[in-house]
Image (cartoon, rainbow, N blue to C red):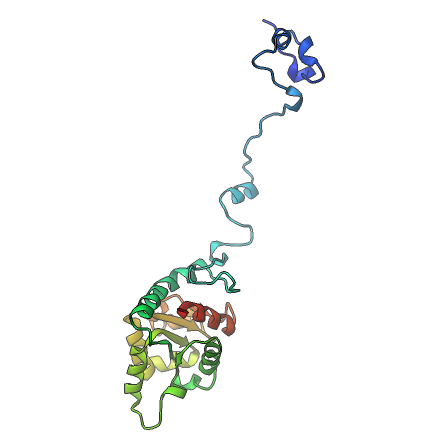
Length: 240
């Protein structure tokens, strides 16, 4: 049986007419003509690490913990990006915000829990950044009036706020073992899915030594992003 010469001679420029296997078909306008002038050998998947990385969706820039994404509550024009861990941790809080916004629209956005030593430092910085973004914050320095019983005012602030922000600083870590006011605020916040830790000037490893329960709550960390970025994410979280 005659063999097709296309892989050697090609079938362009009339080559089919001189092929012993295809000449009769080309002569009669055959049903299976094909142009081997564009013939190329089949390609096979490579096993190199770079190609396997692309096929699995991994970038060469690092692990999944640094990948960024946008949660559903973040506006399209926002410049804030979140890690998947942050989105996972903040989603239940956001769901509570939406529920409370519908049922109790007059609540404050945020209750800021902080150590007394931070009231003129990191706590005030975070408060000012949040208020500059239109967030309504319960903050002891402005909401705890003279002559008002402290615990009663704090209880009222907790009840009337949608989200509790716990500013975890070295001062907070020193105060918590003493079971003071900050510890009582924290206990109330931990009972609900409405708490966001903001770790500042310390680490989760240090927090675990003082409060395993609080350390189990993922939150935001100023070692990874600025206080301004943290405030931006909180403002998006509580926006309604």
